[in-house]
Image (cartoon, rainbow, N blue to C red; front, side):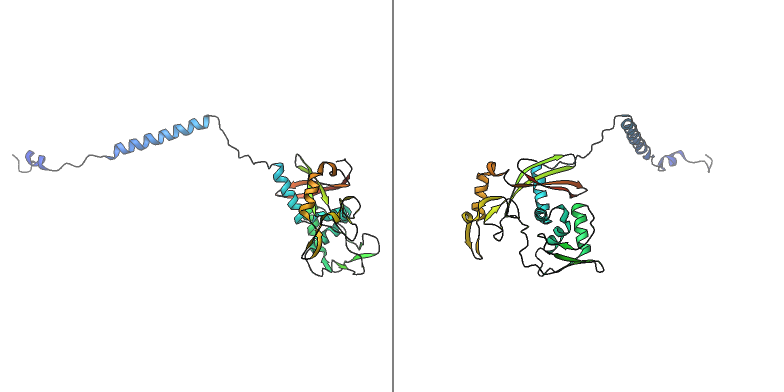
Length: 266
């Protein structure tokens, strides 16, 4: 045997290199990738089903509550006294509610209120008293503010009803019409609880519903509301009702139209 020729017995004792175990793994990965690709292609060729989230439509009860809150928060009952021609006066009433000695009111604040609630713009000028006995607020155009003249001895009109009830609510497209019955009481103007702030349309004799409180005589609202509800079918078309037409713009409401109704018209 040649001294350089490998010994077969020694060759058998030499450790052989390990077999390559990566090939099965690569094959498995390839199969998975192929399956994913096939599924993707099949999904593209199939019919797409797009699930669109449908916004829940509010019930009329929910809308009613929301609009009643809107009227209350923006002091829109003042429209019953001043009307849509008196939007500046309505704005002043809202801005001055709960404010002591409210003698000067910013024109900018009034403009913002009217724009936000009615989506309208108004031209400012002096504001006459509702009984036409002179100027109530003078408009200062230089400083853009209204100044109370303080020359009126009579009481202001009551702009807050003591009881409100929904007569009807209707929704058509993006417009909602809300009709309200209201009860007002102003002892300076009338001895009656009336359907209007001026004390014209009499509903109940106030003396029948008074009780004593820590602040003197006042209307017993529990007794009054029970009497009104029990006789509502007879009283709902007595005097006046108040019709509001709202439209929703984005997430907020706009009061588009306001009317005072009489009799059974609506």
